[in-house]
Structure formats: structure tokens, C-alpha cells
Length: 328
Ligand SMILES: [Zn+2]
Image 1 (cartoon, rainbow, N blue to C red):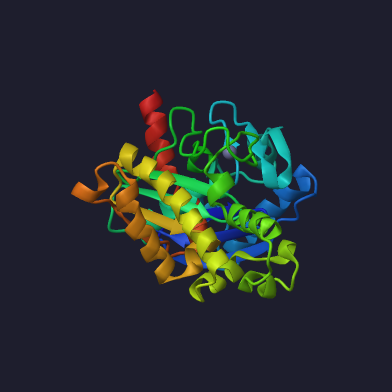
Image 2: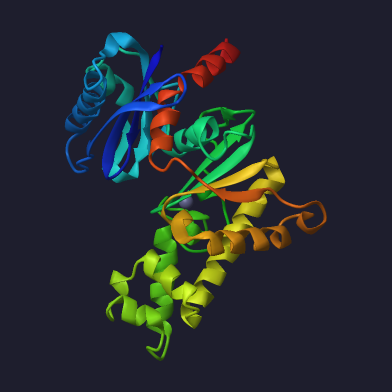
């Protein structure tokens, strides 16, 4: 049996796993990312946690062919430069060189949202489909495009950044510096932020949201917004209605371009419950080109949680091999 080694690098945790050919994780290890530490320290931690995942099941680097890593960033495959990773404050870092000092294995790096989408297609919510769009609605909005069961990342690997597609011309400023990105409206952070603004502007304090956050809007969580929405709190209903309008508007663009078979939702917001998912599905047809006549793909919830990123990273190689072959 062949084994694969995958590492999902997040702002909070470095999660490594040993994955079988059947996409089962037989060993996993996780440590805090320790953002704020030096590049060298973090890279060493990445290698250590991955090595620990191997040794926990009696394996070593000799038992895997490569090390697949999903990172919340963009790596230029031509130069090997990590262009930026917000969670670590890294800009133009020679990440592949840094990693090479800690392993003899070939290293394959891919955007983490692409890895999550790939993991879901291989072994999760998308395993019965060949073409999918995945959106991870968390602190940001991660995007992954799967075409014919492969990650689509464009000519230079930077494609599929769906969270940074323009949703509102000249709109709210995004974490990327641009204005009006989908992420500035559809991330969990955006939903909480826009709700806090609305609370600050509201004359009364009769919304359940005030009670939920103990009178401190800064403490308000997305979970509390959805709880209040389920209890039909008018302010929460207004904010969730608005959120679904933005989200389905963004999704309608992706459907119009790619016509995927399915849209997979991951991240914290995707756990808001079935009623929320149904609301999105109801609204999506009306928002999408010819949606009422010919229908739209269904929006379903991701299945693998954090495992998707590990599995996707571990199984990256086939895609890379193919793309290298094509380039020659
Ligand atoms: Zn952006």
C-alpha cells in the first residue's frame, strides 16, 4: 500500500496526516502554527509535525514519494516564491528553499482552499461529481475550482481565488487591499462586521443580538447571529437575508462561468444549519442566469471539515505531474 503525506497550514494550526491510496487518514498530528515566529521556526515546525505523523504509524520519509502542503497563500510555481501569506505576514518568501532544508522529499505546495476542494472531490461531499466549485466561508472566503476532477488554478497557479472576485464595484475594502471583493461581504468576519455596524446604527436595543453579545457588539459571533435568525429576530433576519443575497450573487457568477455539477460550502458559516442551506438554494435559482428555466446546481455542505485540506494536500501529486507534462 502506498502512503501519502499531507500538511494543511492554517493561521491557527499546522495539521499533518498520512493518507492511504483510498484517502483514509491513518495518522494525524497537529500543533499550533505559532504565527509571529520566524520563517525558519515555522518551517521547522511544519517538518516536525509532518515527520511525527509518519513515525506515529511506523513510517518514515522513505515510505512516501513527496510532501504535499496546502498553504493559505499563493506560490508562484515558476519561481518557487511564496508571494504572500497574510496569516504569517510573509511576502515574497523563498518557501520551497526553506522547506528543502528540512526534508529530502520533493515538496508540492498548493493554495489551501484548492486543497480542501480537491479533498472534498476525492473523498467528501463531491466524490460523486467531476466538476465542482467550493467556497470556504470562514475568516476569509476561500475558493476552489474542480474541473474534471482536477484543481483548476489557471496558467500561473493563481486562479480560483473566488473570494477576491468583484461583487460590488468600489465596495467595502477587502483584506487584499482591493474594494468590493466577495470576501468583504461573504466571509464570517464580514457578516459579523456588517451586523455590528447595523447594531451601532440602530436606534433601539430590542434585538436579541444585543442580549447575545452582552451589550458589546465587538463580542458578537456569527453563531449568535444565526441563533437569533432561527428565533426570527428582525435584525438578524435582515442581516442573514442580505448575506444570502451577496453570497448567491457571487455563486451565480461562478455557476454562469463554470456550470459545475455542485457547489460545496465549507468553513464556519456552512455549519449554520439546514434552513440556512435551503435559503441559499431557494435564492440561487432566482439570482442566476436562466436559473428559473434550466435550474442551478445544488449547494451542499462539505463533509470532511479540516481533513479535506490534509487529504487534498497529500494527493496533490497527480495533478502536478500532469501539468508539468503539459508544459513540456
Ligand atoms: Zn480581496
